[in-house]
Image 1: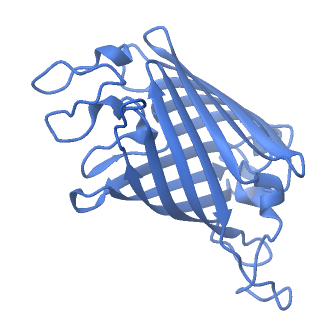
Image 2: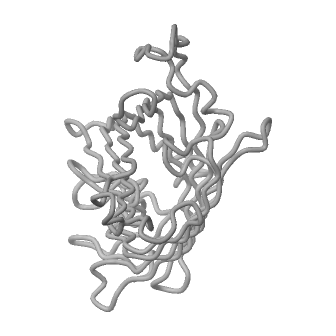
Length: 270
């Protein structure tokens, strides 16, 4: 389905960039993109994927990992305030010798306000402002966590989506000793994950989509990049997906370690 030809209840949908509202009172121009959807109640958020086949030089042979993520958000009481939750896991499903462990799981709740001002010159522009927590729920010395205040600008234009997010980390006190669970688990995390990231998604033809993510810290030269290609299956109930990742911060436990990974699987939301 072409983004400009999406049907909505009762009327033909306006093309992306139109400022009309759909039958349910939300702005239909954003509904083709999960990240910026504004549906009432529970809705999609970040990509939902299952990658049963991944390859990374860091995790070879029987340790090749099964990587999956689910994500959703809820619009609170019909307002523009949202609660979002994303969880990503790295499961060593094929590592039978070690009882198929979950190597890492990252938990990411957030609360944010969305403003879509419908300015005359940029009617598609939207703004998110929020606070989020991310952690891996592990004990010391493998515990990782941080809290951020963030702002984001998003702009859907025809078959493209631009999403620019910047953040400020909420400071934590230094550890008093290595066993101090209340101290900062990863004081240098911004050296590797930086202060922001850019997402660009482009629909190719009527079915495929290419998404690029860039993130980094110019002061340290550390960062990450990923490229994801998707296309729907014949029944359009899910998307075949291929992703290439390179850089820091694929998971919290690897925030200060370069990982290169090629993943093949499916997406339920992109």
